[in-house]
Amino acid sequence: MEGPVCLIVNPHAGGGRAMRLLPGVAAALRAQGRTFRVERTTSMDHARALARGARDAGELVAAMGGDGLTGAVAGELRGGTGVLVVLPGGRGNDFARKLGIPHDPVAACELLVDGAEREVDLALAGETAYLGILSAGIDSDVNRIANETRLPLGMQVYVYGLLRAIVRWREARWELTVDGERSRFPGYSVAVANSGVFGGGMYLVPGASLDDGLLDVVAIGRKSRVAYLRNLPRVFRGTHLSEPAVSLFQGREVTFSADRPFTAYADGDPIAELPVTVRVLPRALRVVAPR
Image 1: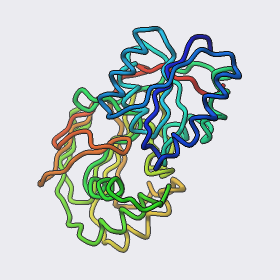
Image 2 (image 1 turned 30 degrees about the vertical axis):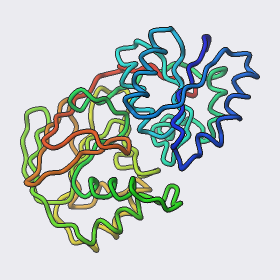
Image 3 (image 1 turned 90 degrees about the vertical axis):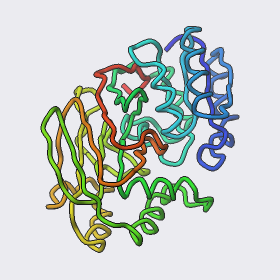
């Protein structure tokens, strides 16, 4: 992959992991003889502005942080207007996991030499793009708790958030419309998946495709708290979809709401208040991935 690189780094990603690994990434890029510059973000809006500038300058745009940063940068490259390079620097790095990109960002730099460009779908919630899974309900509480914690929990932060959230959880009533087909149900959550992976390796939709032009929708209905927790390990293995309270849909446009306010999170960050409409942008992103 030819061209200069704009390396956009979230200095807070992974509890400082991105900054600790940045010198190694810089050394790897220098070893390739590649021209690059490093930009440290101060906010997601700042990251988006940096991505636009790099795109317009004809640079390869490398996101070194978590899924939130990667999604923010990807949204500015939609429509094939730039090429995304993913250098995992956060806790979860689920988009990289789905693509088979190494967890070590130094190793991921090698894809600039021996990788290939791939076109993948983007999801759009309102006007905000995301790569992984947008969800609301108990996941709203879990994400808020996980983002607020300062405990060094690494990839287990989602499990910690869930154990705290479920204590005070009360059932919500949902209205879901997928490509015009409406349903209503009581339960825990609605999730709209692009990549199908979230929470540091939870395969909510293990068969989700990144280039089929479809969103995968998971609705988790009524069940006891004990049953919900008992099913959690199966999500890491991707074997939970046969559970009676879990429903799976596919479509190109999804709208959902609940009987009380929820914030929808995507790629680990708050993205919209309910009700929200999500649509897919087929093969709208060019990304460097393993061959």
